[in-house]
Image (cartoon, rainbow over all chains, first blue to last red; front, side, top):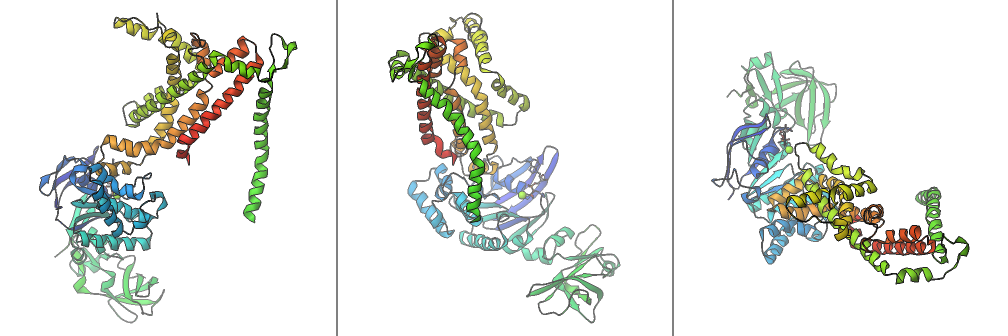
Length: 334
Length: 289
Ligand SMILES: Nc1ncnc2c1ncn2[C@@H]1O[C@H](COP(=O)(O)OP(=O)(O)O)[C@@H](O)[C@H]1O
Ligand SMILES: [Mg+2]
């Protein structure tokens, strides 16, 4: 079981309120991603749940029990740190065994769980190495192994992939998702990378300056961002935000159109512009269109075979049905 | 090819320094070795003659000799134990942010700046003196008989003084090691259910192993040659109770003017130092690579 409830949880460092009173429900077995820009309080929130920081106010409930004052080891949660935090002088086997040793798990049970974890994480051949002799991805897996063997009620990950190179990151992303499908345990995952959030989450929590901007499934956030911040944060490349008279035409202060919802043509359309940079990825082409008079650049996604280049004059036509409208306060107009 | 050239060039460039160091070491060592086989007394330099193994036999049969070796080892070991254990304890204490941390750290380091004879004199006359020392005052306050430290516990007293001088060094080295310990590792261990003691044993101590080794090796080098503290306090007595090998050699050379005997003692001290070094490298040296 791993149901976690935050009730008016607050955190202050001295006079600075990093997390204003915050409420959140995390259901058993859910994969929840906290996403937001650097410094918005994601790590702090995760550490509050882990018990590594004391709350300044509010309550944390784990499976309905008040755990606000429970020490970290007693909360039944396992954490994977950004730096992996492996014990450098212990072999991989000893690293993975450490939490079980501390809990007094019998030796044969320890061996069984290490065996299983090593097999699942492809570490069987490395059990007798020291962390210093492993690659970044292997260290990451050891850190996950150390968390798995505790059989926690929830896993906490703090930017676990940020120290890996791009290719490895995609691989580990899949592995963690598979792990979640297999174990069916609650996972709380912190990242500043919206792609990780979109691809892995059952539920995304978008944070800004310690406040929750929106909670929802990846597609809910993509289809109906509650405000300008979420609209700009979710989706890659970013949504185009247009203000001024063009927005007023649609009865809004700001309108947002995603690059994939704009049709581009060399002959006719609604908005005229000139192609600045064009990125041909093979499957897709991204145009950064200038001189539209709407915004500095408008990003447009087109098919891979389109024959338009830098300097060409183009016409853009937004898909009105997929357009997002925001009022003067930045909130979504339904 | 290129690397082989670089290597031989590097060897060539290193050579002058190494040769100079070698001469620096070999010449005095050779002279000491030579003198140790001579009957050479400063009171009668004209009567210098070949002595063979006499000086060594003389040292060997001197009842003070084995006392001196034992005292040397006890002194080194005693100071090492106190400074390493005490150093770890103090480092753990001042690693935590406390009010007035800067001043506390300077106070803790300051004994290191007091030169050995001065430190020993202060301990002798102001702290351990049986009638006006601080310890005597404390004893009298509790109605106890003051302890005459240098008469009753001569070697222990010297160990205390020397440990006091070396504690700052150990503390400083161990503190820097402690400060480089990764905070996330500690938090991970905390989440893994390790209590404060387990974290100390399984994380802090292994992390400090290298620093502890450095402290032990460096201190041993200096502790084998302790001399000033003995000279100004007990003069090696009572009897031979606080005479170490260095002090025994000093006695042979400066009190008996026996250069040959002193040289033989010096050679024995060199051999002892090497034995200790080999033992130490075997015991703790693996922490250094
Ligand atoms: N121990 C601390 N003392 C003071 N301020 C802190 C501390 N830890 C974090 N902060 C501040 O809290 C804010 C949120 O930090 P953090 O949770 O690490 O952000 P994120 O993980 O989202 O990048 C930052 O402004 C940071 O400077
Ligand atoms: Mg962070």
